[in-house]
Structure formats: structure tokens, C-alpha cells
Length: 264
Image 1 (cartoon, rainbow, N blue to C red):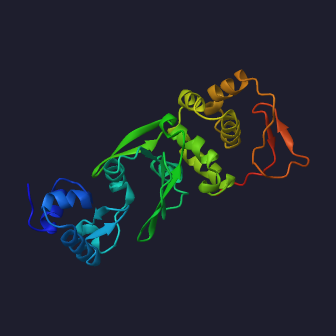
Image 2 (tube, one colour):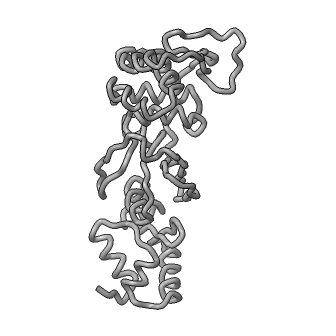
């Protein structure tokens, strides 16, 4: 079907619940020159009806979000990743927010991808992409949203990622706070299964933190897994921190070189 105006094409996409379109798709749908499409796009951007995202891809702003000047990323990130053929999952603090964690950076939306990608500025929010070379091995699940679906790391994989990317997650104390809020969404066996996808040190750190937070029942299977690996080294709870007079935790085979102070 050919469209006379870009507005008509956009209206059709909105009626189908689609918020993303590409310049290439618009060229094909309207059958006009590159210059004509470029000018139409400029006018729509100027009137805040659409927002440029990645090169050649645009976000349609529904009427209810036009005054705000942005659209919540969870409503369109799946469409954008599909349109650009980019495997992904929403992770870290953004995933944790879907699992009951309220202590997270609301102005940053964190997405794990299999290739380097530049961040997207979206009004008050920034979408930050993190390169994860083991993206396809990380356990994830699909979540239904108002406009489709969203791929999230599972609660257990999110917990491991928070420690693997601890600096992107704030700091160890902040991670501990988030883990405490997420704990009821995690399951002992799934935690053990997720551990198989990560280096052993993260299972040790995560197990210690969950125990410290009072979730010993959650870590029983994880502790058995760690013990079965017969770890000989005592890695640091917090990499890069001093170890002078630090105690050793024999259950998790860790050097406890950090005093934890989770947020209230």
C-alpha cells in the first residue's frame, strides 16, 4: 500500500501498535524521493511527532506522550531491537525494577546487547547499551507490556549481572539493597542453574551477599554448587579494595574486604 503523506503512514503504524519505523521503510511506503522523505521527517521531528533514535530509525510519539516529549523505553525497545535485528535483553537496574526493586536509576534504561552501541538520549531518560559477549547464554524471559513484549534477564541472571557489572549498578552497597528487594522473585534452583552461566566468583559473591541479607534458604543450592567446584582461591568480595586484616569466609571462600551498608 502506497501512502501520499508521511502522516498517513505514521497513523497506520500507530493503529497497529507500532512505534518504530525506518527511513527505508518510509521510502518504500510513500514511493517518494530520499530528499522528500528527509524533509518530511525533519518537519515531524521539529513538531515532536517523531524522535530520532539510531541512525535511520525513528520513534513515533503517541499523543498521550507528546507533552512529555519522550516515550518510556519499555514500550518500544523491543520493536527497535527487532527492527535493527539486534538480540538484546533489558538488564541490571532496569530489569530489577520489574522484579520489585525500587532503588534504581529511573533516568537510565539499561539494555544488554551483543555488539557495541551508542546511547540514546530521550528527554530526561537515556538508554544505555552494554556489550555482553555472552548475551545469548544469559537466562532471559519475555514480559508482556501495554504495547507488546519485552525481553528481560531472569531475576536470577539479573542478580548475577548486577555483580558482574557492579560499577554500572552503582556500587556494592546499592547492589545489596537491590538484591534484598528482588529476593522474593528468585528461586534456589534457578539461582543454581544461572550460576552455570557465570564465572564462579560471582556465585561466591552473590551467595555471600544474600546470606548477609538474611536469605540463607535462597542460597542453599547455590552453596552446594560452589562447594562442589572445590574452589582453592579466596577471591575478593570487592575487587580493588584493600585486604589488610580482612576476614575469610569459608562457606563462600571469599575475602571479606568490604563493609556492607545497604540503603534503608
